Amino acid sequence: MAQDITTPVRQLVEDAKKAIEEISAEEAIALHGDGGVVIVDIRDVRELHRDGKIPGAFHCPRGMLEFWIDPASPYHKDVFAQHKKYIFHCASGWRSALAAEVAQRMGLKPVAHIETGFTGWKKAGGPVEMPE
Picture 1 (cartoon, helix red, strand yellow):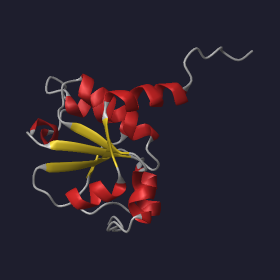
Picture 2 (picture 1 turned 135 degrees about the horizontal axis):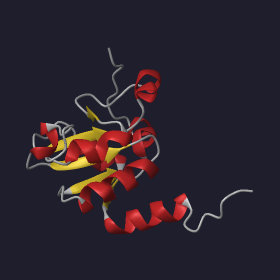
Picture 3 (picture 1 turned 60 degrees about the vertical axis):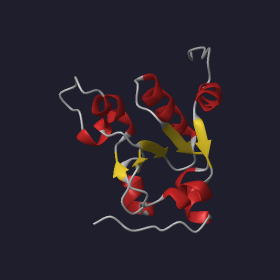
Picture 4 (picture 1 turned 60 degrees about the horizontal axis):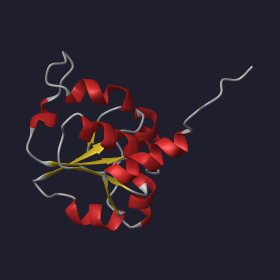
């Protein structure tokens, strides 16, 4: 017998979107290369190899995000200790909404996410490179 899900993922994403800044792919493209911005790609490494990535984006698998943000974690990454704006993205904007919301709750600010994800980035003509 299946579990009764009290809060479906769609609701979690909608709640997260209400708490964070959403930016369009075009806005993200305009910010690309700005020294005060870190674009964080939370997709699975297989997605990067299959679809490419935003040049200069920092790859952080979604499952490691909280551990890499927390300075008290043995897995902390210095990229998350900078005073910059963090723009998260996934493929379509659902995972990145959840990631941005949890990053913000952890104290990382300012944060945003690309509302249409990497798919929207490519559709809007953003630069893409294939990982090595």
